[in-house]
Image (cartoon, rainbow, N blue to C red; front, side):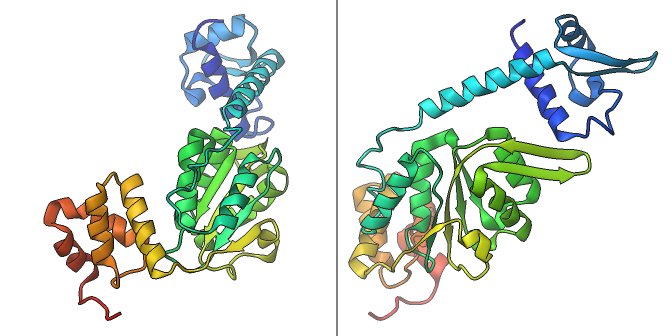
Length: 307
C-alpha cells in the first residue's frame, strides 16, 4: 500500500457510511462522488481494496471490499487505543486553579474525568458563575480529545458530524438550555450507551463512541426529564465580592495573558459594575485600544452602582 492510500480508504468509508449503498448507490459510486482520481481508484481496485460492481462506457461503479473494511477497522482500533493512551491518568493539582471555591465540584469533575466508564455532569446556576470556566479548563487539558459546543449555536448536522468525525472522549456543552430539541434527543442515545444514530435519506450514521458529557446550563426546566436523569446535577452558588474579584484577576492573568497589575486594575474598577466574568474579558481585550476607564464606560455605560 502506497503512502496516502489509507487516507483515501478512510475517506471512502466515510462516504459509504453517509449514503444508502443498498438503494441510491447499488451500482456503486464513481470518482466524482469521493473526489479521488480514477487512476488512484484503479490501483486500489487492483490491490483488492475496491470491488468493481458496475462498468459501462460512461460509468464505473466501486465499493469497498471486505479486505478494505477490515483494514480500516484495525486502523481505527489502533488510533483509538493511541488516543486513549494520551488521556491524562493523573490530573494535575493545578487543574481548576483559576477557579475560586467550589471544591466539591472540582473533586467531582476530576473523578469523572478519571473514571474508566462515562459519568455525565451538569453544572447549573445563574449566569456569571464559574460554569464556563470549568469547561474551559477541561478543554485546555484534554485538547483534541474534547469538543466544545455552545447550545445556542449547535445544529443537527454540526453535532452529529463533529462527534462522528472526531470521536471525542469528552463533549463539553455550554448553554445547554438553549440547545434545540433535535440535538437534545441525539444526546440521549449518546449518553446512555455511546451510540450515535441518524437515519435520514442520503445520510445515515450508526457508530458507537462512549463519551463523557460535561455541560453547563443556567436553567434546567427546558431540559427533558429523560435528559436530566442522565446527568449528575450540581448547582453553583454565587461568589461573594472578595471571591469574584479574585476570580476576575485569575482569569485575566491565566486566560488573557494580562499582567498582575492590569488584571488588578480591571477587577477593581469593575467592582460594583458587573458580576459577569465575561465583562472582564471583554474589557481586557478592548482596553489596549482606548484604556480601561473608557472601555468600561463604552461597554457598561452609566455610573458605578452604590455599594
